[in-house]
Image (cartoon, rainbow, N blue to C red; front, side, top):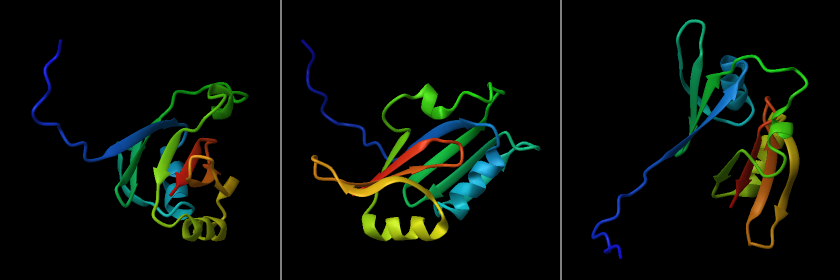
Length: 131
C-alpha cells in the first residue's frame, strides 16, 4: 500500500503542441483572429512557433507532408484538440465573431454548467472555449 505524499507539486502552466504544415501562417492566424501574441519562431525558415494569451501557450511544429485529402477532423473523429477556460465567454464570442473566426458552435450552455464556443482554426483543429 502506498503512503500519502506530504507535499504535492503545483502544476503552473500547460502548452499544447500542434503539428501544422505552415507554422508562420498558423501563428499569424492565432494572433490576428484568436488574439494571441506571437512569442517567437525557431530556425530559418521557421520550423517551430509559439503563441500565448493570458496563461495559455500554444506551440506549433512543422509537419511532414501528409496527403491533402486527410484532415484533422478525419484523424480525430470526435472531441476537441484544446479546451481553454476564459472569464467572459460572451465577450470572447463577440471578439472572435468580429475578427472572422470560424465559429463551429456556440455560445451554448452545456448540461455540465459550462457555456462553450467551438472554433475551427486555420488547420482544422477544434478549439473549445468555456467559462
